[in-house]
Image (tube, rainbow, N blue to C red; front, side, top):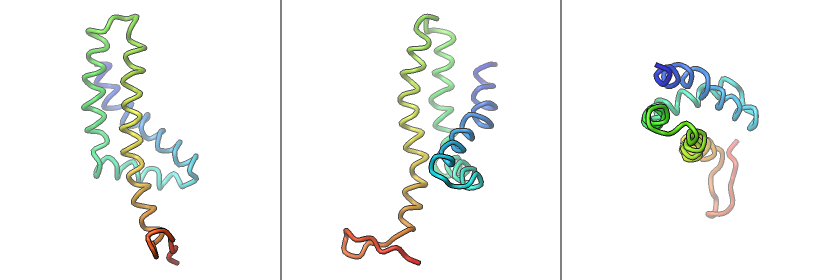
Length: 114
């Protein structure tokens, strides 16, 4: 039940939204934009499906098979790869936004529209 609570409630409503809000603070865009990106990543890039696909089995293994003294190392290792996945997903919106900001004149010079 702890694994289900973590996946369905805590991560969906707290952990991932806080990550997107933190990114908004760092990159100085609005909280509304952060939530829009979060929802977009869920709907268009399968954020929660990827999260559940990785973390549900990992947490089940952690609390049933992994010896207690290896759990922190195991979670740290998996977290390292999850952060790469999350970074890849959340940066896709940045790439789309950057494409809309300018057009290339000669394959090197960016002409900003506006």
